[in-house]
Amino acid sequence: MRLVSSYLIGLIFGVGISISGMANPAKVLNFFDVAGSWDPSLIFVMGGAVVVAFLGYRVVLRRPAPVIDTKFHLPDNPRIDARLLGGSAVFGIGWGIAGFCPGGALPALGTGRVEVMIFVAALIAGIFAAKGLIALSGARAARVLRTES
Amino acid sequence: MISGPLAVLAMTGRMPVVQVPVSMPMLLVGGFIVGIGVTFGSGCTSGHGVCGIARLSRRSVAATLTFMLTTGASVYVVRHVLGG
Image 1 (cartoon, helix red, strand yellow):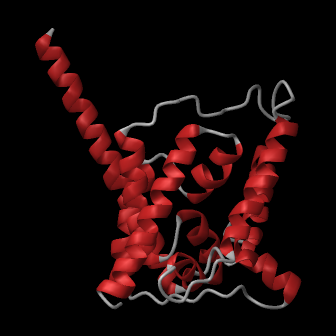
Image 2: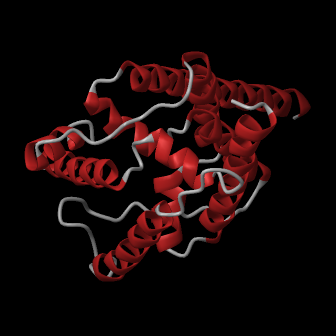
Image 3: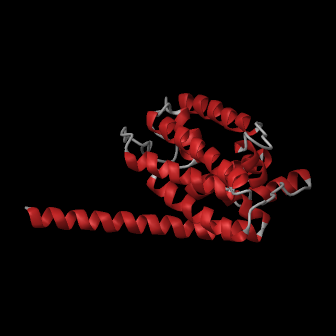
């Protein structure tokens, strides 16, 4: 049941991303190229998605729990810290270089193009590198705490 | 997600357009940087930009404003300063 719903949700997302042009780096890069070949149309994709998601959350979160889970899993960290802003800034630099964001690239894999596979391989390598760094700094902090106490 | 384009192909008879005006080395560099950024930043365009803003999360608004600005700056540098 959970597998089926995950698949259908991914499919709907993938269809939306594919139709809207978010999986097309040429279009995405033109959206950001205000000083050059600017194509502002993607703002309607994001705006439309936010409006639909906003209304959807209103309806869904009125329920005590999801249909196939015992509770909703929502982020509860309210802190705006250096890790959030730094990570976001770094993400933007990469997005501007490659033209793919993760949500655009995964559906684009379905077109079978080599460029997309190369991007996704590098993306996964970057995620593991960052996770390794986080684990390493966590282990170091724990060691420091141990020696201090 | 990966079957999305195939569903579009089945419905419209045409594969969605994916044009990549970016060289292979730049795709590798960009992909690696995106991977690091989304891990430290806990999300990307869909996570912060759509889901987070739709939940009116201040964290997500801050994250989205940040990456929209740096993406624009990055595109500007690549296209107009470096002349890619």
